[in-house]
Amino acid sequence: MRRYREVLEEVEVADGAPAGFRWRGRRYRVLQVLGHWHEEAGWWRLPDGATRQLERSDLWRVEAGPDGGVYELVRRGPRWRLDRVWD
Image (cartoon, rainbow, N blue to C red; front, top):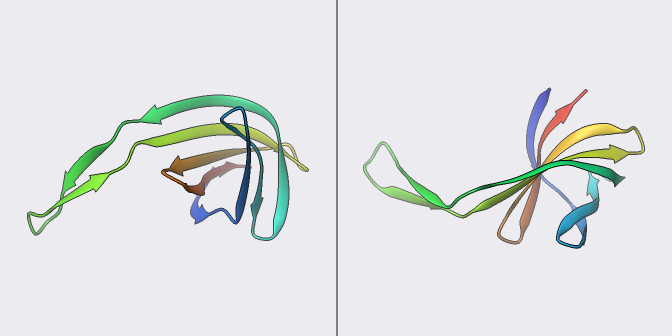
């Protein structure tokens, strides 16, 4: 498993779930959603005492092609990122 946390260039959504995405110039089609869960909104206290608000996150673990790999996608508000890839 590798962690990337990179912004996705484009995400196609169907029925509220990712159906395809573009990462590093390459197009991936979602073959199967393996899991979907939420991380609720919250906050963190920074070392200087200030607080940082975090939006709710929606996470999907998907099998995607052309290689049939397993990818974890995260949506926070309108932004999508690729978080992890299982080789």
